[in-house]
Length: 93
Image 1 (tube, rainbow, N blue to C red):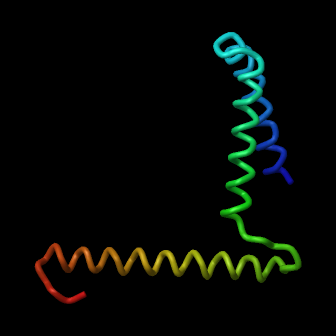
Image 2 (image 1 turned 90 degrees about the vertical axis):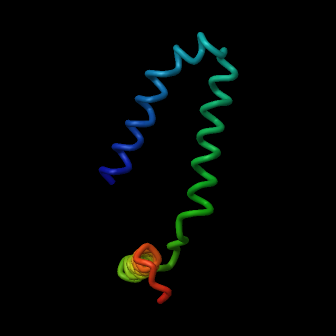
C-alpha cells in the first residue's frame, strides 16, 4: 500500500510541477494529450508485460516470478559462457 501511495504522490507531483511549463510551451490541450498518452502507454505496458494474478495465491505468484527470473538468469549465464569460449578461440558451445 505504501508503494502505491508513493507512486501516486510521485505522479501527482510530477504533473503539478510540469503542467504550467508545458501549458506555456505547447498549450493546455496538448499538455493534456501528452499526459493522456503517458497514461495510455503505462496502461498498455501493464496489460502486455505484467502477469495476470486473479485467483492465484501469493505463494504461486512468487514461485512463478522466481521461476521466470531464474530461467532468464540461467539463459544469460549460458550466453556469457559461450561468449567467453568464443573469445578464447574454443569451438565448444
